[in-house]
Image 1 (tube, rainbow, N blue to C red):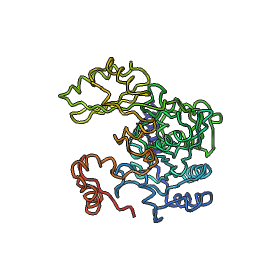
Image 2 (cartoon, rainbow, N blue to C red):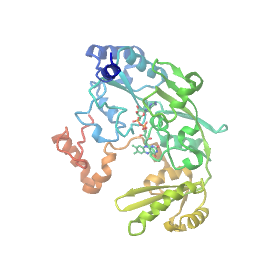
Image 3 (cartoon, rainbow, N blue to C red):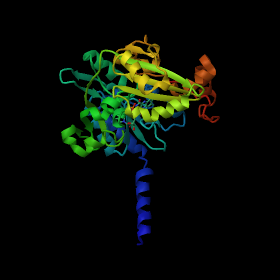
Image 4 (cartoon, helix red, strand yellow):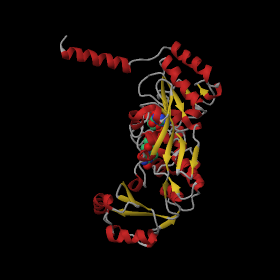
Length: 398
Ligand SMILES: Cc1cc2nc3c(=O)[nH]c(=O)nc-3n(C[C@H](O)[C@H](O)[C@H](O)COP(=O)(O)OP(=O)(O)OC[C@H]3O[C@@H](n4cnc5c(N)ncnc54)[C@H](O)[C@@H]3O)c2cc1C
């Protein structure tokens, strides 16, 4: 056989083997039966369960991925301990049902809870596995993957004032997916990515084994720290190094329009940012005709203004731009822009299903947006009439 023919055959076999496989209904039934022998029934939700839809949408952030045509899971498993995850993986392997794992549901493509092709799959939703155990003396913590970034920030700051963890800015992200992908945040200049501060982890592998760092070996431990979620197993928990933060940090929001020199400020920022003191991070959000410069400084206002005046005078930062607060408060302030927002909002895991479209939806339609989306859900649930900014169908959660 010519090499090219063999290669074509190999690709075809791989393609068929990898992508066209759909388990039979009998296999699905066997899978559910298998789950029921190891996992309490109240931890498994099938489409017949009254709570199936509310569990499914509990961490869906984008209504685009919750329409009648969305390929939904055969069931959702909500483990409360490692053995449930192991059982789900083992049953899935035995009966050819793929398992998708969801921690915080922030996957940009929604692939932790939906499939792009018609396949039978189950979701293992880790929302109930979210404890944070802080060892203040050792400056470490074990955090379960189902915890959100906000829950971690809060638990660490309360248990060990003066310590923190370098991770992202959106408090509702799950640590399972976030750390798996690296974890960039406002302290990465000083302390690196989240994965740079991972010391150990527990994982359920494709054979249902529960492994720690030593048992999984160096390649797998390396791969789960940045190789992306959903690839190598289900990470149940992470042992992380906590980092010191001062009692007072300073946050500043400065917005520039194009007329106020936004373009040249962004240009300067691109070359300057890597050379700034490592206690100082500036991120820029460019939208329409504006550039918003968000600065976090691990220290007080005077030192920040001094550094910015000498290194980034184009921004024109003065004391009036400074907001001094605790590091924990800064993780709330970066999103709320209000120093009075209680830090307890970090514990709120639930965001509206329409969070993503809400921003433009509400600026177009104000308080009418939700009603428009519900109406759309009633009259065009399949979203036949749509464009990039059309009103998404908001379906009943019953
Ligand atoms: C609004 C928003 C803001 C963001 N801000 C930042 C930011 O500031 N910094 C940054 O670095 N990133 C940011 N991201 C990206 C974010 O880190 C990733 O989308 C991340 O994968 C989300 O994790 P999750 O657990 O919430 O998502 P999920 O949807 O639950 O999971 C994402 C992926 O990881 C897999 N996965 C989930 N849990 C596990 C687990 N326990 N073990 C193995 N695989 C798992 C899933 O199967 C899926 O493939 C942001 C994303 C959004 C939507």
